[in-house]
Amino acid sequence: MERAINAWSVLVSLDEIPETGLHREIEAPDEVRAAIAKLAGLRELPALAATFDLARRGDGVAVNGRVQARVGQTCVVSLESIENTVDEPIDLVFAPEPYRPARATPASDAEEEPPEVLKDGKLDLGALAVEFLMLGIDPYPRKPGVEFTPPKVENRGDRPFAALAALKKRLGTTQS
Image 1 (spheres, one colour):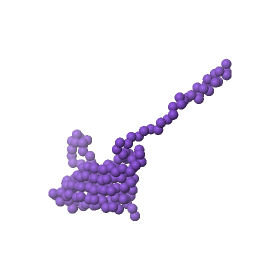
Image 2: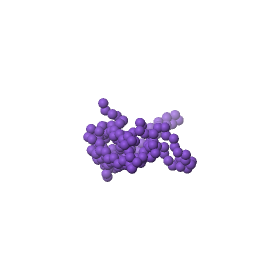
Image 3: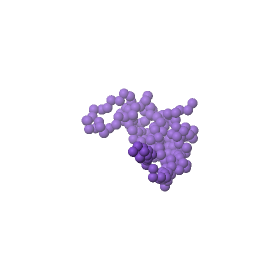
Image 4: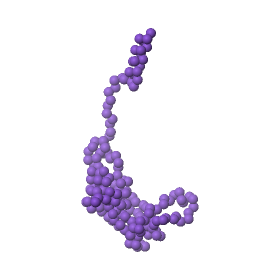
């Protein structure tokens, strides 16, 4: 059975992260890249890798890293095959559910986003990499140097109401 939403799963338990932090590098195998390419509507996904630095933050975890990929797409103008790169930074905080923020001043509340939810004390680095890959894919890729030129329309001098004006003129001359 194909996993539609979670095509790549690399779980890390909060218990696996020492107080000094944890560095992880992951690379998607061929079958995972094929499933993600299908999910993302890509022609192909020749490379997908991610690096993560995980640091304990109380009963949660801070995640910093980067997702890098090569994506095969089709130019929206020329319909030619092109390859683009994705390089997306990751900077998130995860906390167990239910999250209760520490007491803060109103000014700091506006600046800080609430953390993501840790499910069962685990973090899925593969799903996180796929999420940031999707955010980094250009939805309208163009081959370098290609410009869209609208089709030329013959200008016959007709205006939208030319037929109505002709009818009005004809009716006006016959009714005198």
